[in-house]
Length: 366
Image (cartoon, rainbow, N blue to C red; front, side, top):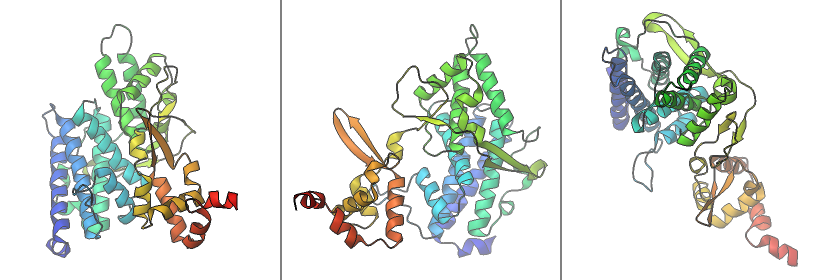
């Protein structure tokens, strides 16, 4: 273990140690007999363990993890995206980290109800993911730092994740029955299922609007797969037994779903919607940001957007209206399309001649 530690860059070694310390705290809290605040502690430390581990790996790979404008280290979401690029994080691994983060976010800033089965599944999946990344990036194993006897344990083996989701949905429906007066607990459980959508999509942030929509759908007796179609894509692969169980969340595919814009306020919207959560988070780049990140002058960035018809693609461009003022913003999808074109040998001089600002007007009057 010491030989591995000595080979690391200083900041990577410190971040890795912090990651392992937080994972120990999460495992200890999970197995604690103290129920009050237990799930909160597990989620807080598990999320922190992931963030420190991913950043340790990025530092070791010499990837910049400080935002040059803010002067602070990058967000957890940004660390995940860079991890997919530089640490070989799969979509499923990124989804597990995002789901833990989404559960932690609501638990830290408001409250959720995370059932024992769901908490155990995420704790074991978190341990599995941590060990996989630790070995992949650092050539180290979790067993060098944490005895198997203190890993998250349960009196029951991991249960099928779809069964757990069905049970949660049935419990929510029961709690919302007339006369029950348990609406707060039902809504706390709804937040947990909404947060779990982060397994299969990025950008998840639970809002009261989402909770209200789900609550209305449950009261109307909508089926679970109508209300949470994305969760139907989720499965878990379980191997081993006892303290050595491994759990990996995977996508199994599901029925097509339709989307509701994040600013949709319609009362008649059915809950078979999967919301595109927090559009400002998805469309977070300005035109200047795109050009700067691609090392283009801003006029050339405009020419490339025109050539690729980026502004005509709703997955790339969105217009926000605030107080009568419009703000055009772009997604990572826009950046990726532009970068792929440049990396593919696109001749920017040709693009500039035909699509530079003012070129169209001059062609029409020629």
